[in-house]
Each structure stands twice: as structure tokens, then as C-alpha cells.
Image 1 (cartoon, rainbow, N blue to C red):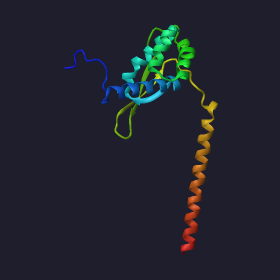
Image 2: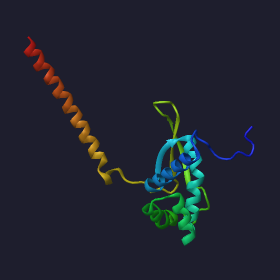
Image 3: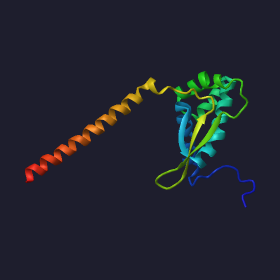
Image 4: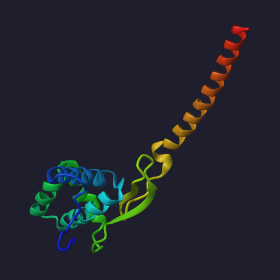
Length: 158
């Protein structure tokens, strides 16, 4: 029985588990959305909510407490300046978990862990949409080149 046994072990030693939590918190506050397994997301969700709660206090002590868990100065600055300001009137529940299906390699249940009030970024802003079209055109051109090579090789062999 697991009475009074709190937390997730995740098959790791304590130091490795805490290092993984720190890395996940840095990535979450840097990108505001990460893809991870369901067990890891559930384990880090409480820590992420606690870091936002500390950031809303805006005291030196709170900043040092967050720095002990999120060892990236730039991410902590962003957490205190922008993220905490967005959640100023919200009392808890700063993260959400969205299931995205099983991982292709081992069928582990994968989820998106994201901040609730995450501003949506337009697809055209980064130019990624145009890059995808260019790649598809290159792919079609590459397929045509392969056919031409096959025809030339068949003609040379005849």
C-alpha cells in the first residue's frame, strides 16, 4: 500500500529526478509549452504552479526561492516580469495538461504541459509556414530529379 507516500519516483534517483524537474521548469517557462510524458507532467505541474505563485509575490526572498529551482537568470526574469503579471488575478491553476496520444517508440502516453494564459503566436510571424511550402516544393523537385536519373540510367544501360 502507498499510504502517506507522496510524489512520483519516475524510476530515477533523487538527484536525477530533481535535475530533470529543474530542466523541465526552465523549458516550460522559456517556451510556455512542452511535450512530455503524462507521469512527468503530473509530477512537475505542482512545482510549476508553485514557482508562479512565488513570482507573484515579487520579493527578493521569493526570487531567490525560484532561483533555487529554476537556475536560469533570464527565465526567472521573464517569469517575474511577464508571466506573473499575466496571472495576477488568477488564484492557482496556472498549467494545463492536454493529451496528445501515445509516443511512437514505446507507446508512452504523451501530453502537452502548457501555461493556461499562453498567448497564441501567429504562424506567419516566424515564417515557418512559408518554409514548409518551400520544403514541399524542394521535395517535389527532388522526386522529379530522381525520375530523370532513373531514365538516364535506363537509357545508358540499354
